[in-house]
Structures are given as structure tokens and as C-alpha cells.
Image (tube, rainbow, N blue to C red; front, side, top):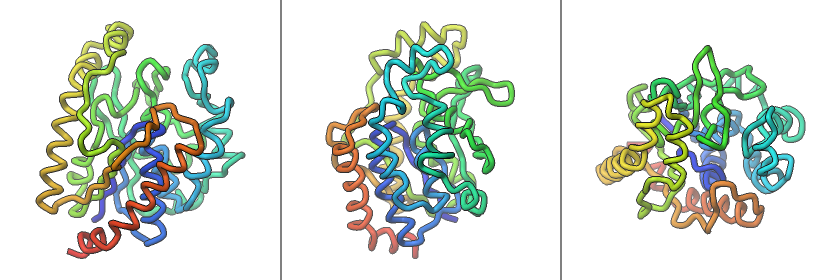
Length: 282
């Protein structure tokens, strides 16, 4: 079985989109796709087989005022930097159609990693194939402070990266003996506590387990990266890491910068293709 794990990173995850398009062109289809935040938000277009859809989304939609902006955060019906009904409903259902039929036909598992606000633990939720408003994707992408909590089956969830930024172990537990991991940070990146962490801990103070996950996130992230590097060295996983993110920030909307990052991912995948095929053929 082949697992594909896609790290989040909001706009930085556009690097992954170039890689996934090459995988589709080469008919390299994973049996288990697990993404965090933007990783799964972009990953579903890989599962629906729509080459180039994510590039169009990044370069033609992500810079629109309807897509994101501070004004959307102050809308009491939205309370997010992103205009959620536009991003997860209007765009995939009307303006840039998502192929729900092909998505339903995808034979592999599609998993959205989320963080349970009550427990502070990661949960790995199968993405419903018929949810045309992408509730599970909203939950996985719901960055603390920038999104409201997303309720699913009576539980409230936020960004999966809080509890498990790179959930490759879930693919291994699911039985994947080959694993492709796409990271969104350069290999020398070391995560440090975020400047807004104290504010986040105050806002979510009624959920101490979630606050603990926020406090330990950087340390756990760095431990995960160290483990991935070890597995890569042993030839047990195949890892894509950007050489640079070209100053693309979390909320970047500049189509020129995003196209450059996409191209970097696409060219990287083409360059590494022979090595990837040898890894898969072992």
C-alpha cells in the first residue's frame, strides 16, 4: 500500500500542489491520503484527479477579496480570515468546480487530520465523499484565533497541525509499506513557539489539554521532523522538502509568488521522479 501524507502550511502548501500534479501525470495514486489543514484542502483535488485545479485556485482565486481578508474575520457569521462559505462552497460548487463524482470513485482512503478542542488530541476523520460544503476540511484548516471552532458530531475541532502536524504514522498504522511525505518547510527549518501562543492559550483556557498541545507543538514538530529524516536516511519513506518557500507566508495571495512555489514543487517532483519510482518498485 502507498501512503501520501501532506503537511499543512496554508499558502506555503502550494509547493505540494506541483508535486501532486506530477504524481497524477505519472499515475502514482496513493491508497491512503492523509493531510493536515491546507494539505488535505489541496489533497482532495489529487484524489479527484483534477490536474491543474489547485494551480488555478492559487493563482486566480486566493488573491481575491472574496476569498480572504481581515474584514471576513469581523463578520459575525464567519469569524475567520478566510471567507469560509466562499472558499468551501461557492468556489468548489460553482466557480472552480470540484469533481465530486470522481472523488466518490477514488478507491483509497482520504483522511482529514483535526485536533479535538476538548481533548487536545489528534483525530483522523475520513472525508465524506458527498459533503459539498467540506465541513471536515474546514475543521482541519481551522487555525486557532483565525477560525471559529468547527463542530462535527457534537465535538469541536481546530487545525489538525496543533496535535499532529505531519501524520505519517497514521499511514504506517493503516498498513502502508511505502510512504510519500510532502513537507512545506525547508529541511533546515526549526519550529519555535509562535508569538500568538500566549493569546491562544488565554482564548482557549477552558480547554487545558488543547492549551498543552499548543505549548508543546514546536517541540513535537521538531521531534517528528527528526524521525522523518531518520526514516528517509534508512530508505523507508520518500520525502519532498522545498529548497525555499520564496518568502511565501501563511496568507500569501500574490499569484506570481504562488506560481513560483507551485513550479518549484512541480520541477522538484520531475527531477526526483526516477528516484521515486525506484523507491516504489523496491
